[in-house]
Structure formats: C-alpha cells, structure tokens
Length: 246
Image (cartoon, rainbow, N blue to C red; front, side):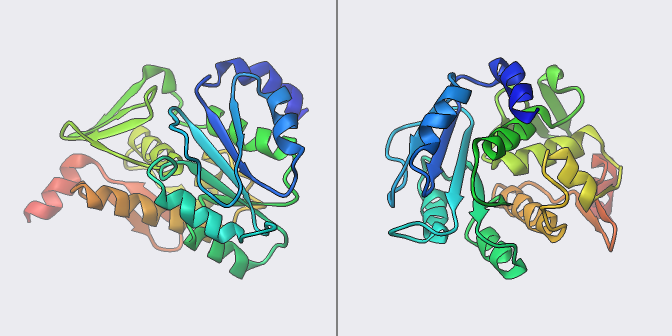
C-alpha cells in the first residue's frame, strides 16, 4: 500500500532530489532507481559525496558497515559542505535507547529499525514530502522579520539567509503557521511524518535544540517557549519583543 501510494505521488517530488545510501545492501540502489525514476540515487563508501548536488537531499546510513562505522559516516556527512544540510536517517540494527542517542549526537535527524528496505525509504521520503503547514501552497510564511520561502525551502531573517536542516525548517514552518499554540512532542513527530512508535519523544528535544542553535548562530531571537512536561509554543512577535523590552 505504501509503495503504491508513493508511486502515485512521486511526480510531485522535486526532480533534483538526491538520495545518498551508505548501506550493506548493494542491490538497494538499483531497487530504488526503479521506484523513483526522477530521483538521483547515489551509493557511497567511506567517503562523503564529492559531486555537487542541489535540491532536497536525504541520506540513509547503516549503523554497521564493512569498513567504517555508520556514526563516522554520519559525522563526515555533517562536516562536508555538500551534505551538511541533508536529512540523515540512521538505520539501527537493534532498538536501544543509548544507540539512538549516539546516532542523534553524531548528527542524524532520526532513525529507523533495520534492515533498510525500499518501503522504508519510500515512507521517509513520502512523509517528508507530504508533511508540513496546511497552506504550503501559499509558498511564503512570515513571523516578524523572519520569512520562510516554502517552495525554496529557505528561511531568511532580516533578508539574510539562515541555513536550516530539513527537520528544522519544517518544524519552524509549522510553528510559524500556528503561533501561540502548544504542540506536544508526539504531535510534532506526527507532523514531521515520522512513526510515533519508532521515535522516542525525547528526540523532539534534540530537534528543537538544533533549531534553536541554528537560529542563534545567525542572531535570530529564540521565540520558542518550552512548556514543561507538555511541549513547545512559538510566541507571537509582539509578546516576545515586549518581554525583552521590560
């Protein structure tokens, strides 16, 4: 059912999209090319992608690889300017909370239970493509001096581009679409198209922390408010500015 759904919707996918695979399954690239004819599929070894890429970029990394650990591959993907802003999914061999935390600390955006299959890739790409603000077709959202160009997947603050990872951008867009509204961690997981049963709710705290650090690095005030034991709220601009003026 999932495969058929993605086949019906895949024409909406950006033809410039690239899927990077660091997996033990050498047949996976060929399987995915048949499912996603408009998407570039790249299988890498121990070295990061050396070709220039544009458009959406997803990476799937096995926890264990023949010559190098998946954690090291994840770190190298984050360090390379070509793949630093990609969406990285770590494919775990076992369900263990410490392993999940290590994957996130290495730079993964989320994780799935292995082995990796074409259906898992389709699920991740389909969720990333379909989730987001209800009025995505509007193509632009604003929150004070902050503007999000949805079609370009680009955020600007006072006309300065602020680079965000895919999860970060979509979280911010969702909050901007619904200011002054509390969202629980499970609601945010669902909004991002993730499997609530597979994603630890504490992973949301990691996503939010990364978003805050990315915004802070470019001088964007932190308007996200943590509601203890409940979730997160994006406060209205006038409320935020008023609290700093006091």
